[in-house]
Each structure stands twice: as C-alpha cells, then as structure tokens.
Image (cartoon, rainbow, N blue to C red; front, side, top):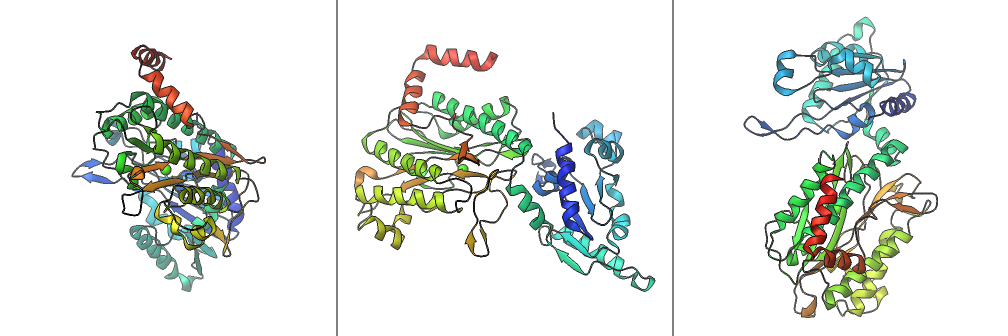
Length: 449
Ligand code: CA
C-alpha cells in the first residue's frame, strides 16, 4: 500500500526551500514504439518523487510564497477509460495524493501565467525537454505582456533538479524499504538463473528466467536491459544482444535488476555455465571478489565517494601484476593507469529511482563524502581480451561482481547479499541444481509458496 504522506512531506520540504519562488515539474510523455503501439509508460523520476502520481500528462506546481501545491492531470473520461484504463481525474487526485488544488491538464496554458506571475524565481528543469521549454517560455512571455498592469514575471530561472537531486541522494525510510524489496526480487532472479543455466542453452533463455521472476514477484519491469553475456561477450561492457549459445567451459556474466514501484535494483553475478570454475577463472573470480570486499569495507559515513573505487583498484592492480597481465610495481600500474586495460569502468554509482541515480559525485571539486542513507552500487570487474602480451589461459575471461548497498552509521548494509556470490556458494547451488529432484522441489516451492 503506497504511503502518500511521504510525497506530501517531500513537497513540503521543497516549498520551504523555494522562498518566494515557484517550481514547475512535468512528468514524462507516453512514448510511441511504432505506429500505434506504445512503450510501457514510465513516469519522470523527479515528478514522481514529489507527487507519487503515476499517470502521463501531469504537472506539479509548487508555490513557495503561499505554500500551495497544485496538480494538473487528465480529466476523467469514460470513453478513454473503457479503452485505456482508469484515470484519477483532478478532484480524486487532489484528495488521494494530498494536493491543495488540482485542475485539468487542458487548463495548463490558461492557468500557468497566473501562477507564475509575481513570483521572484522560477525553478524549472530548463533544457530537459524542448517541448516543455517552449511552453514555459510562452507562459513567461504571457506574464511579461501584462507588465504595464503591474504584474512581474520571475526575473530568474533556476534548475529545479538541483533542489530535488540533493533530497533524492539521501533515501528516506520509505525509499529504503522499497529498495530492499526491489533488491530481494533481483536476488531471487539471480538465484533462479544459476539454477536454470545449462550448457547448450542460449543467453536469451537465461534472460527469460529474469523476466519471469521479476514479474512473478511483482516488479513492474527490468530496471534496464539485462546483460546476459556468456564467454567472450562478458568483455563487451554493455552487451545486450543476449543471443549466443552458452558453452560448458565458459563463464556467464549477468547484470540484471528490476524496478519495483519506481526503485531500481542493479546486481551483477558471474558464474560458470557448467557449474564449476576452471583454474584461472577461479583465480580471476577470487581477485574480483577480494576487490569488492575491499571496496565494501571502505564504505562508511565520512569516507569520500572515491574510497571504494581506490580500494578496489589497489587489489585489482596487485592481482594483474601477480597474473602477469600488467608489468611493473602495483604503484606504477596504478600511477600509469595500465590497470584500465582490464578494468575500465568505475566501481559504482548512485542508485534509486534511476538506476544511475541523481546527485553530484563531487562538490567544489572534491569527492563528496558518503552519508547515512545514501544508496550506491559496488561493482569491480576484470575483462581480459585476447592479446599477444596476455597469457592465453586468461583470454576472454570477463568478470564483474555487483551489489547494492545503503550507507549506515556502522558502514554499509549490503541489500543484495541473498544472491549467491562466493565460489563455494555458487558451486554448491549449481551442483544441487544438477539433480532433477532438487530442481523439481525448488519449482514446487517457488510456484506454490
Ligand atoms: Ca549494473
């Protein structure tokens, strides 16, 4: 059951910050996929964060001077509702979502100039969407035309996202609850994939296990296109074809998470298609896992954003030297950036309503310090493409291990810990999965639990 008071409280905080300003936030438009088919609708994250309102064609206006929150949304329309589904309509929406006033979306152009008149600052996401920019400029000009009657247009336009991003960076209890629920669904899906994977299947068949488990457990969609990358495909960072045949001796890298009530989970696991890690695969896997453990230990309030990344790079660089992938000392490999040949991305990102969530990583040129309530991913990896100067045993090994964490007073809480991760956990689960009775029992449990 959605708790709409949290959205009202967030609007209250923005209203207090606005002073004598007005904020306008519009939601995302419905997107045509082809001809008259649409993509599944997804609201704008900023708009949703302050409204909880899920329909397209909606705008929130916040008036700092009077502390009023106004919603514009679609009218009730029996004919459209018969074809396309329920609409709240302004009256019911104001009531349920806790707005002071609500009007028809069709009245926007008529009412907006009046709402922004005599407000000192307009907070609006300028440049985010050209169509809305044009409309907002039109409202500003409409107010300016009344200047001789003593009405003033806002003299200043600021980016409303600056205010909201800072709030979104720290997850409140309501968000943390949803993020844990989203994470737990994604963990179940990763576990299911380990149980279902067999040599001779195609990557998309494993992808199907994710889609099934996400929806079965109530997630509305994947949070992003799943990466299901067997063997050499794991060295393509954003591989999404998911069309290749899985071979017994290969590793399978899967980066997949779901979206639950707007909140993303984002997990990567890498495991052997055949159920057991081969010699060098195991060594590289243990290295990446040690890098992740080091990164996780570096997370605590007050630690700079970059601390987990630096911890991971330290461990990875040592391993690359030990394996003969990089030459020189660990310090020189880090200094020169040679490690980037095998680890070319960063160790994490903010996570929330957007999978790469909003919020600055640096403030005034320095890495931001972590704070209680921040949510981030921790995802070191190692990707080894064939090359003359790379020992052949390492060729085409691509490994990433990614968890989602919430920063706590003590350090961090790994909310995706239920997805098997150690060599022992993965091999034990996959060995058990080779037994048809075990799988039958799991299915029984999953289907009727
Ligand atoms: Ca990811």
